[in-house]
Image (cartoon, rainbow, N blue to C red; front, top):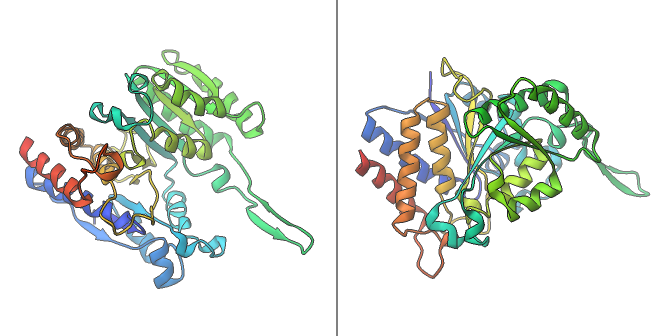
Length: 366
Protein backbone atom coordinates (compact mmCIF):
# COMPACT_ATOMS: atom_id res chain seq x y z
CA UNK A 1 0.00 0.00 0.00
CA UNK A 2 1.27 3.46 -0.86
CA UNK A 3 -0.08 6.63 0.70
CA UNK A 4 0.94 9.95 2.23
CA UNK A 5 1.18 9.74 6.01
CA UNK A 6 -0.24 12.98 7.42
CA UNK A 7 0.92 14.02 10.91
CA UNK A 8 -0.62 17.43 11.73
CA UNK A 9 0.93 17.66 15.21
CA UNK A 10 0.44 20.58 17.59
CA UNK A 11 -0.11 24.35 17.56
CA UNK A 12 -0.50 25.70 14.04
CA UNK A 13 0.52 22.35 12.56
CA UNK A 14 -3.07 21.22 11.85
CA UNK A 15 -3.92 24.64 10.39
CA UNK A 16 -1.13 24.69 7.81
CA UNK A 17 -1.55 21.00 7.02
CA UNK A 18 -5.21 21.64 6.21
CA UNK A 19 -4.23 24.20 3.59
CA UNK A 20 -1.59 21.92 2.09
CA UNK A 21 -4.21 19.18 1.71
CA UNK A 22 -6.22 21.65 -0.38
CA UNK A 23 -3.21 21.87 -2.69
CA UNK A 24 -3.04 18.09 -3.04
CA UNK A 25 -6.76 18.02 -3.86
CA UNK A 26 -6.29 20.70 -6.51
CA UNK A 27 -3.47 18.65 -8.06
CA UNK A 28 -5.80 15.65 -8.13
CA UNK A 29 -8.38 17.76 -9.95
CA UNK A 30 -6.02 18.98 -12.67
CA UNK A 31 -4.03 15.78 -13.19
CA UNK A 32 -6.57 13.05 -12.52
CA UNK A 33 -4.09 11.35 -10.19
CA UNK A 34 -5.23 10.13 -6.78
CA UNK A 35 -3.18 10.57 -3.61
CA UNK A 36 -4.38 8.59 -0.61
CA UNK A 37 -3.96 10.19 2.81
CA UNK A 38 -3.63 8.34 6.10
CA UNK A 39 -3.66 10.39 9.32
CA UNK A 40 -1.66 9.77 12.47
CA UNK A 41 -0.80 11.61 15.66
CA UNK A 42 2.55 12.72 17.00
CA UNK A 43 4.08 15.07 19.56
CA UNK A 44 2.02 16.69 22.31
CA UNK A 45 -1.27 15.29 21.06
CA UNK A 46 0.22 11.80 21.20
CA UNK A 47 1.55 12.41 24.72
CA UNK A 48 -1.89 13.48 25.91
CA UNK A 49 -3.59 10.42 24.41
CA UNK A 50 -0.97 7.70 24.78
CA UNK A 51 1.77 8.99 27.09
CA UNK A 52 4.42 9.00 24.38
CA UNK A 53 5.32 11.44 21.56
CA UNK A 54 5.54 8.64 18.99
CA UNK A 55 3.51 5.44 19.14
CA UNK A 56 4.19 2.15 17.40
CA UNK A 57 1.02 2.66 15.36
CA UNK A 58 2.37 5.95 14.01
CA UNK A 59 5.73 4.32 13.30
CA UNK A 60 3.99 1.62 11.26
CA UNK A 61 1.99 4.29 9.46
CA UNK A 62 5.06 6.21 8.34
CA UNK A 63 7.08 3.12 7.49
CA UNK A 64 4.38 1.98 5.05
CA UNK A 65 3.90 5.40 3.48
CA UNK A 66 5.14 6.91 0.25
CA UNK A 67 5.96 10.17 2.02
CA UNK A 68 5.37 11.84 5.38
CA UNK A 69 3.54 15.16 5.69
CA UNK A 70 4.43 16.84 9.00
CA UNK A 71 3.00 19.97 10.65
CA UNK A 72 4.78 20.88 13.88
CA UNK A 73 5.06 19.69 17.48
CA UNK A 74 5.47 21.17 20.93
CA UNK A 75 4.18 23.99 23.08
CA UNK A 76 4.23 25.37 26.64
CA UNK A 77 1.77 22.70 27.79
CA UNK A 78 4.52 20.09 27.57
CA UNK A 79 7.59 22.19 28.44
CA UNK A 80 8.03 20.74 31.93
CA UNK A 81 7.93 17.07 30.97
CA UNK A 82 10.95 14.81 31.37
CA UNK A 83 13.29 14.98 28.38
CA UNK A 84 12.29 11.49 27.23
CA UNK A 85 8.68 12.62 26.92
CA UNK A 86 9.10 15.94 25.12
CA UNK A 87 6.95 16.36 21.98
CA UNK A 88 10.04 17.15 19.90
CA UNK A 89 11.19 13.57 20.34
CA UNK A 90 8.38 12.60 17.99
CA UNK A 91 10.00 14.24 14.97
CA UNK A 92 13.56 13.44 16.10
CA UNK A 93 12.72 9.75 16.36
CA UNK A 94 11.00 9.76 12.97
CA UNK A 95 14.11 11.25 11.38
CA UNK A 96 16.30 8.62 13.00
CA UNK A 97 13.92 5.74 12.31
CA UNK A 98 13.63 6.55 8.60
CA UNK A 99 17.29 7.61 8.33
CA UNK A 100 16.28 11.02 6.98
CA UNK A 101 19.83 12.28 7.07
CA UNK A 102 19.52 15.19 4.63
CA UNK A 103 17.35 18.24 5.25
CA UNK A 104 17.01 20.53 2.22
CA UNK A 105 15.89 24.08 2.99
CA UNK A 106 15.60 26.38 -0.04
CA UNK A 107 15.56 30.11 0.62
CA UNK A 108 13.48 31.73 -2.11
CA UNK A 109 13.10 35.50 -2.30
CA UNK A 110 9.75 36.54 -3.75
CA UNK A 111 10.26 39.80 -5.58
CA UNK A 112 6.93 41.14 -4.32
CA UNK A 113 7.96 40.52 -0.70
CA UNK A 114 11.32 42.28 -0.69
CA UNK A 115 9.88 45.28 1.07
CA UNK A 116 8.40 43.01 3.74
CA UNK A 117 11.83 41.79 4.79
CA UNK A 118 13.69 43.71 7.51
CA UNK A 119 16.75 43.38 5.26
CA UNK A 120 17.33 46.14 2.68
CA UNK A 121 15.84 45.11 -0.64
CA UNK A 122 19.10 45.91 -2.46
CA UNK A 123 20.84 43.20 -0.41
CA UNK A 124 18.25 40.63 -1.49
CA UNK A 125 19.02 40.83 -5.21
CA UNK A 126 20.02 37.48 -6.75
CA UNK A 127 19.51 35.53 -3.52
CA UNK A 128 18.83 31.86 -4.21
CA UNK A 129 20.20 29.64 -1.45
CA UNK A 130 19.83 25.96 -0.65
CA UNK A 131 20.82 25.04 2.90
CA UNK A 132 21.57 21.34 3.34
CA UNK A 133 21.51 20.30 6.97
CA UNK A 134 22.74 16.97 8.33
CA UNK A 135 19.74 15.68 10.25
CA UNK A 136 20.37 12.45 12.15
CA UNK A 137 23.53 13.02 14.17
CA UNK A 138 25.37 15.73 16.12
CA UNK A 139 24.22 17.32 19.37
CA UNK A 140 20.59 16.34 18.97
CA UNK A 141 21.36 12.62 19.01
CA UNK A 142 24.77 12.17 20.66
CA UNK A 143 25.14 10.28 23.94
CA UNK A 144 25.51 10.90 26.83
CA UNK A 145 22.70 13.44 26.97
CA UNK A 146 21.42 14.11 30.46
CA UNK A 147 21.00 16.43 33.42
CA UNK A 148 22.95 15.74 36.59
CA UNK A 149 21.90 16.69 40.11
CA UNK A 150 24.15 15.36 42.88
CA UNK A 151 22.69 17.64 45.56
CA UNK A 152 25.73 19.92 45.55
CA UNK A 153 25.38 21.35 42.07
CA UNK A 154 23.36 20.95 38.92
CA UNK A 155 24.97 20.16 35.59
CA UNK A 156 24.04 18.91 32.14
CA UNK A 157 25.79 17.32 29.20
CA UNK A 158 25.05 17.04 25.48
CA UNK A 159 27.43 15.19 23.21
CA UNK A 160 28.30 16.21 19.67
CA UNK A 161 29.30 13.10 17.75
CA UNK A 162 29.96 12.56 14.05
CA UNK A 163 31.59 9.66 12.30
CA UNK A 164 33.17 9.63 8.87
CA UNK A 165 30.21 7.95 7.17
CA UNK A 166 27.69 10.48 8.49
CA UNK A 167 29.77 13.39 7.26
CA UNK A 168 30.68 11.85 3.92
CA UNK A 169 27.15 11.08 2.75
CA UNK A 170 25.73 14.55 3.46
CA UNK A 171 28.75 16.29 1.95
CA UNK A 172 28.74 14.10 -1.14
CA UNK A 173 25.05 14.88 -1.66
CA UNK A 174 25.84 18.58 -1.32
CA UNK A 175 28.57 18.43 -3.95
CA UNK A 176 26.22 16.62 -6.34
CA UNK A 177 23.46 19.17 -5.82
CA UNK A 178 25.98 22.00 -6.28
CA UNK A 179 26.94 20.46 -9.63
CA UNK A 180 23.30 20.81 -10.74
CA UNK A 181 23.20 24.50 -9.78
CA UNK A 182 26.02 27.03 -10.25
CA UNK A 183 28.76 24.72 -8.97
CA UNK A 184 29.45 26.56 -5.74
CA UNK A 185 29.46 24.95 -2.29
CA UNK A 186 30.01 26.56 1.11
CA UNK A 187 30.77 24.27 4.06
CA UNK A 188 29.99 25.67 7.51
CA UNK A 189 31.86 24.51 10.60
CA UNK A 190 33.61 25.66 13.77
CA UNK A 191 36.94 24.02 13.09
CA UNK A 192 38.91 26.56 15.11
CA UNK A 193 37.33 25.11 18.28
CA UNK A 194 35.45 21.83 17.79
CA UNK A 195 37.04 18.44 17.08
CA UNK A 196 33.93 17.34 15.17
CA UNK A 197 34.34 20.37 12.91
CA UNK A 198 38.02 19.61 12.32
CA UNK A 199 37.04 16.14 11.12
CA UNK A 200 34.18 17.66 9.11
CA UNK A 201 36.49 20.06 7.27
CA UNK A 202 39.10 17.36 6.63
CA UNK A 203 36.52 15.05 5.04
CA UNK A 204 35.03 17.88 2.96
CA UNK A 205 38.48 18.64 1.55
CA UNK A 206 39.09 14.98 0.78
CA UNK A 207 35.79 14.66 -1.09
CA UNK A 208 36.35 17.90 -3.01
CA UNK A 209 38.91 16.08 -5.14
CA UNK A 210 36.05 14.07 -6.68
CA UNK A 211 34.22 17.26 -7.70
CA UNK A 212 36.81 19.49 -9.38
CA UNK A 213 34.11 21.49 -11.18
CA UNK A 214 32.65 22.73 -7.86
CA UNK A 215 34.14 25.77 -6.15
CA UNK A 216 34.43 24.99 -2.45
CA UNK A 217 34.56 27.55 0.34
CA UNK A 218 34.88 26.95 4.07
CA UNK A 219 33.38 29.39 6.56
CA UNK A 220 33.13 29.42 10.35
CA UNK A 221 29.55 29.36 11.62
CA UNK A 222 29.71 32.71 13.41
CA UNK A 223 30.95 34.42 10.25
CA UNK A 224 28.34 32.53 8.20
CA UNK A 225 25.59 33.94 10.42
CA UNK A 226 26.87 37.46 9.79
CA UNK A 227 27.41 37.00 6.05
CA UNK A 228 23.87 35.65 5.57
CA UNK A 229 22.60 39.08 6.51
CA UNK A 230 25.37 41.27 5.08
CA UNK A 231 25.80 39.58 1.71
CA UNK A 232 23.48 36.60 1.20
CA UNK A 233 23.88 36.53 -2.59
CA UNK A 234 27.43 35.17 -2.18
CA UNK A 235 25.94 31.79 -1.18
CA UNK A 236 24.44 29.10 -3.36
CA UNK A 237 24.56 25.68 -1.67
CA UNK A 238 25.43 25.63 2.04
CA UNK A 239 26.13 22.38 3.89
CA UNK A 240 26.32 22.18 7.64
CA UNK A 241 26.05 19.85 10.60
CA UNK A 242 22.74 19.50 12.45
CA UNK A 243 22.77 22.31 15.03
CA UNK A 244 24.43 24.93 12.82
CA UNK A 245 22.04 24.12 9.97
CA UNK A 246 19.02 24.47 12.23
CA UNK A 247 20.08 27.91 13.43
CA UNK A 248 21.30 29.28 10.09
CA UNK A 249 18.20 28.23 8.17
CA UNK A 250 15.94 29.92 10.71
CA UNK A 251 18.06 33.04 10.39
CA UNK A 252 17.83 32.83 6.60
CA UNK A 253 14.03 32.95 6.84
CA UNK A 254 14.34 36.66 7.62
CA UNK A 255 15.60 37.16 4.08
CA UNK A 256 12.32 35.82 2.73
CA UNK A 257 10.27 38.09 5.04
CA UNK A 258 8.94 35.43 7.43
CA UNK A 259 9.69 32.07 9.02
CA UNK A 260 6.33 30.99 7.64
CA UNK A 261 7.59 31.19 4.06
CA UNK A 262 10.26 28.49 4.07
CA UNK A 263 9.71 24.80 3.26
CA UNK A 264 11.91 21.78 3.79
CA UNK A 265 12.38 18.22 2.64
CA UNK A 266 14.07 15.53 4.72
CA UNK A 267 15.45 12.75 2.55
CA UNK A 268 17.01 9.31 2.93
CA UNK A 269 18.23 9.40 -0.69
CA UNK A 270 19.96 11.64 -3.20
CA UNK A 271 17.47 13.87 -5.09
CA UNK A 272 16.59 12.27 -8.40
CA UNK A 273 17.72 8.81 -7.29
CA UNK A 274 14.48 7.51 -5.79
CA UNK A 275 14.26 5.15 -8.75
CA UNK A 276 11.60 2.78 -7.42
CA UNK A 277 9.75 5.50 -5.57
CA UNK A 278 9.89 3.58 -2.28
CA UNK A 279 12.61 5.45 -0.40
CA UNK A 280 11.56 7.54 2.57
CA UNK A 281 11.13 11.30 2.81
CA UNK A 282 9.35 13.83 5.03
CA UNK A 283 8.06 17.31 4.23
CA UNK A 284 7.49 20.14 6.69
CA UNK A 285 7.77 23.92 7.00
CA UNK A 286 10.80 25.05 8.97
CA UNK A 287 8.71 26.93 11.54
CA UNK A 288 7.63 25.47 14.86
CA UNK A 289 4.20 25.01 16.39
CA UNK A 290 3.81 28.75 17.19
CA UNK A 291 1.33 28.16 20.05
CA UNK A 292 0.90 31.92 20.55
CA UNK A 293 -0.98 32.21 17.25
CA UNK A 294 -2.60 28.76 17.11
CA UNK A 295 -6.32 28.89 16.46
CA UNK A 296 -6.30 32.54 15.38
CA UNK A 297 -6.41 31.85 11.61
CA UNK A 298 -3.33 34.00 11.03
CA UNK A 299 -0.68 31.31 10.43
CA UNK A 300 1.11 31.51 7.09
CA UNK A 301 0.60 28.20 5.21
CA UNK A 302 3.03 28.98 2.38
CA UNK A 303 5.97 27.15 3.98
CA UNK A 304 3.82 24.02 4.20
CA UNK A 305 2.48 24.52 0.68
CA UNK A 306 5.98 24.88 -0.76
CA UNK A 307 6.93 21.75 1.20
CA UNK A 308 4.13 20.08 -0.75
CA UNK A 309 5.85 21.18 -3.95
CA UNK A 310 9.06 19.56 -2.73
CA UNK A 311 7.14 16.35 -1.99
CA UNK A 312 5.91 16.11 -5.57
CA UNK A 313 9.44 16.68 -6.87
CA UNK A 314 11.29 14.21 -4.65
CA UNK A 315 8.80 11.59 -3.45
CA UNK A 316 6.67 11.37 -6.60
CA UNK A 317 9.27 12.61 -9.11
CA UNK A 318 6.83 15.07 -10.70
CA UNK A 319 8.92 18.18 -11.07
CA UNK A 320 6.28 19.66 -13.34
CA UNK A 321 3.71 19.55 -10.53
CA UNK A 322 6.26 21.00 -8.13
CA UNK A 323 6.86 23.90 -10.49
CA UNK A 324 3.10 24.40 -10.93
CA UNK A 325 2.62 24.78 -7.18
CA UNK A 326 5.58 27.16 -6.86
CA UNK A 327 4.35 29.26 -9.79
CA UNK A 328 0.87 29.42 -8.24
CA UNK A 329 2.30 30.64 -4.92
CA UNK A 330 4.30 33.26 -6.82
CA UNK A 331 1.20 34.42 -8.71
CA UNK A 332 -0.86 34.75 -5.55
CA UNK A 333 1.91 36.69 -3.80
CA UNK A 334 2.22 38.96 -6.85
CA UNK A 335 -1.52 39.58 -6.74
CA UNK A 336 -1.05 41.25 -3.36
CA UNK A 337 -2.60 38.66 -1.05
CA UNK A 338 -0.82 38.55 2.31
CA UNK A 339 -1.07 36.72 5.59
CA UNK A 340 -0.48 38.83 8.67
CA UNK A 341 3.23 38.00 9.04
CA UNK A 342 4.09 39.33 5.57
CA UNK A 343 1.63 42.22 5.41
CA UNK A 344 2.79 45.83 5.41
CA UNK A 345 -0.47 47.21 6.70
CA UNK A 346 -3.70 46.23 8.42
CA UNK A 347 -4.93 44.35 5.36
CA UNK A 348 -4.24 40.65 5.56
CA UNK A 349 -6.01 37.40 4.80
CA UNK A 350 -6.80 34.40 6.94
CA UNK A 351 -4.84 31.16 6.72
CA UNK A 352 -7.68 29.47 4.85
CA UNK A 353 -7.99 32.32 2.34
CA UNK A 354 -4.35 31.96 1.36
CA UNK A 355 -4.76 28.21 0.89
CA UNK A 356 -7.95 28.65 -1.11
CA UNK A 357 -6.34 31.25 -3.38
CA UNK A 358 -3.30 29.11 -4.17
CA UNK A 359 -5.45 26.04 -4.81
CA UNK A 360 -7.68 28.10 -7.12
CA UNK A 361 -4.63 29.44 -8.93
CA UNK A 362 -3.38 25.89 -9.57
CA UNK A 363 -6.72 24.99 -11.16
CA UNK A 364 -6.72 28.13 -13.30
CA UNK A 365 -3.23 27.61 -14.76
CA UNK A 366 -3.98 24.27 -16.36
